[in-house]
Length: 409
Ligand SMILES: [Zn+2]
Image 1 (cartoon, helix red, strand yellow):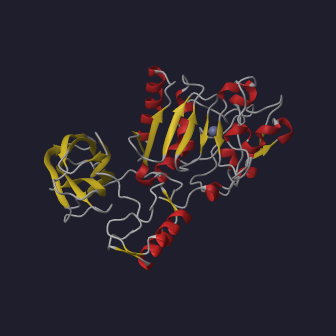
Image 2: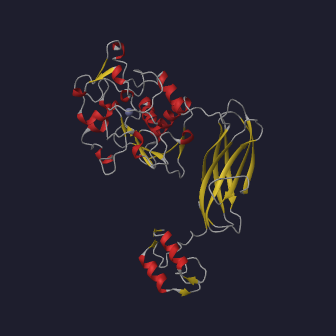
Image 3: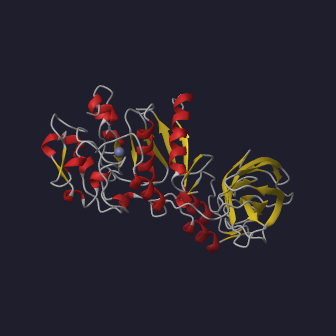
């Protein structure tokens, strides 16, 4: 029988205003901590429109909570390596990415399924259980429990009377995608004693009895686990990928330099490549060859699956206007007919942030006070704060700027 500490949960997004993480158990109740947490909704409902269920390009960014020991960080990295070996997913230490896993020991094994946007908790209790960590990582990659499949009632009977009531949600059925035949051997299947109040929580249907003790294994990835994650995150045949970019500072002055560090990988189709790397400055977040080149280097020959590290500095050209700009690191294969580019774009701020046009009183909010001040200053007014568009005249145009920028700025 699995100990209760072997269990895990998958968090789903609580309806707004509903019980969310607050619903997680307290330290005084080990059952709740180690078993099952939180509410379930149909998966994508509460996700932001721009957040995709699967992590774009298979890039999953993460950071460790400060309380995670060095040993446990190695253990997590080892589990990440296991998942990277069987799929096109990449776990990357977070620089400034907005969607990422926040990994820690928060009292239990649990996380959300798929990308939810922002910081998302991934908690590990059983740090010494490699495949429990893999189980949680597969949740984060977007997988649900096997017993939540829509076809599960063909294979198992869920005995709700034997399941702690706060655990019932872990046995809900979803219409989420799955890709392979029902798999009793999946690392994502609960065991027959998980969440049990004393008797078996799941019983195999007639014809499948041989799998009764197989459910809940935490010793390997099953064949279908491997197939599924590879379908979700195919190995990319693209030759080159800019994995991440970190700048010494993202707030700069024209003429000023900053360090830049970037990791580039030849994801490879088995072939080495000749690689060029350049850094361009753009006024929008789409980098094209027409954008100003501020750094370039010939990375030379990169073996398949090998890395190249851009580790240098870039200088913002003197005379660059203050405002929001974008640095793009582009890696280009120069010797391959099916060459692909990889690019990552980082937003930077040059000089002081643009003043907030229309915020005449400078309080960071465009509102009634600014409107009254503008009306009060109506007419010719050179250089005054009410002259939002700086044309030397306070008038209708300035009122329109106030209206369009209404609110915090
Ligand atoms: Zn789970």
